[in-house]
Length: 331
Image 1 (spheres, rainbow, N blue to C red):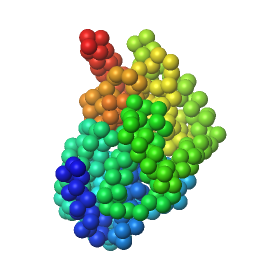
Image 2 (image 1 turned 90 degrees about the horizontal axis):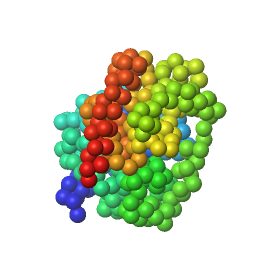
Image 3 (image 1 turned 60 degrees about the vertical axis):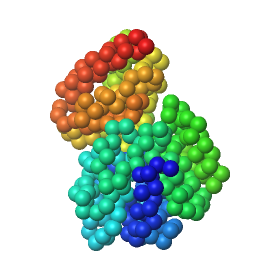
Image 4 (image 1 turned 60 degrees about the horizontal axis):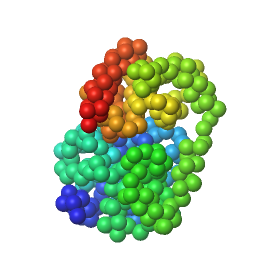
């Protein structure tokens, strides 16, 4: 067994009050990992508080358990004083928002599968061989002896399913399917997970149409990108939550290797998502721009005028794309 993994399990065994923290702009793997760790530790009789310093997308509340995740202010004002902090699915201190202020004040474990992780915890179990952090939480819970029921199994399964694109991405390997099978055998319901993402509002389809109007291509269609401005969201009565998955729609276009989606969440604050199909390393581009992620899925946030950021990022993307393409051709 990995030494860092065993050390974290040992610390959690001894801990009485645990704060479980996820990352800003939470996705399915992050929500799943936070909830799975929190519910698992609670089953062992520990006092646990879950926190994410960001608004949680509305569709995750299809699981009632999501309500146990509190915002930063609520956690701080609760007077909760943890003796251990477990951070899941976050690659750097800034990714946990204001919770980073607690680093150094309490022993901290970072559990993550991003290759760009900066190892900012007291203990760090980072393993890029896992398709999702939810799989790592499953191993922690199993080693701790957490008894799984249908709800915990389903919530844990959500992280694996969403971070592998419902088993469509290249990270859906044998271990992913083995872990998913294990959770299903313990009562996990895959159809309940898929239902979360089959619950769209009509406004989202209108927003998608707006995004499609902005589609542009580069490099003979191998690079595709689009954007949504703050005004686009407001005119469609939507928020950034409603554009979840749009970058995947761009990636699905025939002949595309690299898809880029720009989302102006607040005026002059742009979230950028990168997705690739076969060979382009998105994480290298994201790191260059101050972000991080995986080879086939990464992201970053930039501040400034949307049109200027689009021009800047596409310029850098084309340069790196051509460099990586030449390297692939020479293999």
